[in-house]
Length: 310
Ligand SMILES: C[S@@+](CC[C@H](N)C(=O)[O-])C[C@H]1O[C@@H](n2cnc3c(N)ncnc32)[C@H](O)[C@@H]1O
Image (cartoon, rainbow, N blue to C red; front, side, top):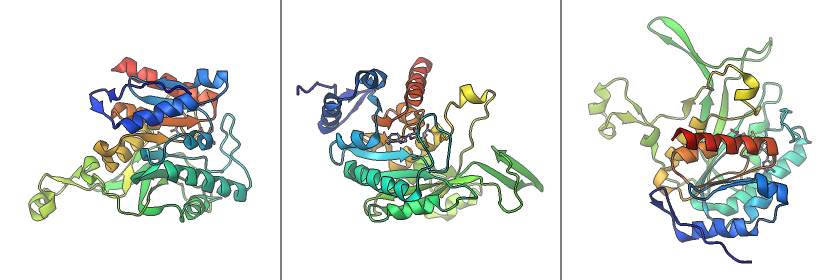
């Protein structure tokens, strides 16, 4: 099959040839049906590649080790009503499937790559995130556990203030679930991070002098990330997918991994493309897979919307 030549230079940044080659080979080998080809989206200039395709077959066509960072949220098997995916399959089958795509992902992740895996449970089925993590235990090392906080109440100057989105549940047994996990998985736990890229200023400025490492008044943010959803007026139009993460969450992950170390970012479960928007904003090359036409079209629309805002 004839290989197409892709421009290696993108938006002022040069990428190693093998990445361009990897995507070029991938594109050329994509033997999807006509509609799927039509619905897939290749923005070669900005190097954002979104494919209407099962991620298992998609990842098989990528070169070994060509992805440096993955920010993703697979279906949690909690019975979420996706437009086509069945989110309630027997737990054993679900965990087998997790292992299968986990193995495919491990092959394409570079030695010093990061997988940021967003997972949540629900009060009546709280084990899912732990079971998924345990299933991936032989493939990856758990380097960090991050808590994505969606809503929080804090006492400030004697009064309690609440921030973020709060959807009350009616229960005598369960607390409201205001957080999800982001498991940071790597090959061997030795990936160096750019902690200050998402750092926060010291609130007590005397610490700037006291701690030697504090020189520039930025400290590590820690592993609790308060990232609320945006308030929306019109549910269906503004949130056309039932289980998304905010763009900012993916931005944090990319920055923490280190932008200058990322040749290619990936989300195998693209949804409406929040990880691709974050990559676009940070000028990263990106590849994503999604099996649902409605969602991938929405992802394309949103990327095009970003271009218009530039
Ligand atoms: C939790 S959602 C991801 C949402 C995404 N993070 C966002 O912010 O829009 C999981 C997505 O995976 C998709 N999906 C399920 N199985 C898939 C597969 N085998 N390959 C690719 N996508 C798949 C579903 O259609 C769903 O949109």
